[in-house]
Length: 300
Image (tube, rainbow, N blue to C red; front, side):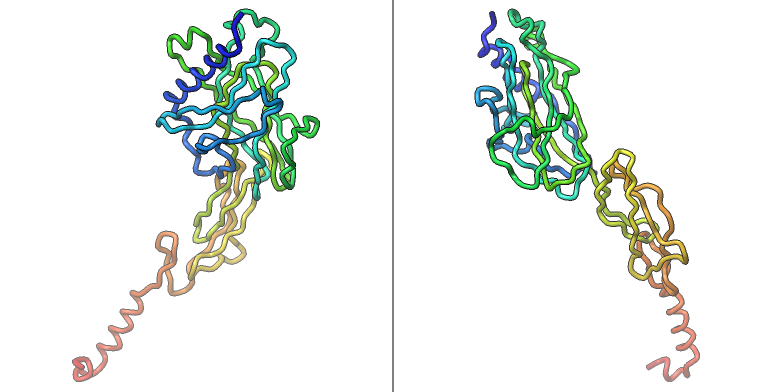
């Protein structure tokens, strides 16, 4: 029989090793981060129910920077129901939220004496609210997002050979209508180390296209959404007749389908993303006028 404390030590060891060798995914410039547990070095203080379930521990990332993570490894007893809930997350203008999870999970077949009690999945939930609701977790108020399974699970042999098995899963929730939400993780008897949780939404950042400025725009609520945005002509430009500038912000935070444009006003010409005064005509006029003056005046 394998003790729970030994299982926890295996999980912690794997957590430290995978943090040393995995550099993670670079943040996409279209992402607006609402929560990044890996960026917080102080205690996360999420709610664990029961308190003997999920445990907050310290780890190190690839730069030897302290990070806070959660683990649970209650595989010896059947019928586990361990919940972990984040703090309240205010969503701003977002309607469609991305949740990125990085975690390690122990292969049940590598654990002697736990046949029938050990699981290799956990569940992800959310609850929408307009304000914080206190520390009690009422399971019936949460909506299930998905059952999360590992692409790769680790064994005792992997630990001995220093092989890393860090999993990354992304899920989407929405459309959301309230001011904020909670995320919750339900363990039903697995040996898991939740290395990081990142929550974000996507937006199209402001650009200048066809001499029109398009502001920051949050993406739509559906994967196929295209948000139409009207542009504003830059200084010294005006809309082309019956052809006002428009762009469409895609669900992935990309500007698509430009329609219409602005043109420079009379006396100006386009230079890059701006309109510049046509000084050449001005100087020619001055030359003509001055050259026609008597020599005496030109020498003044």
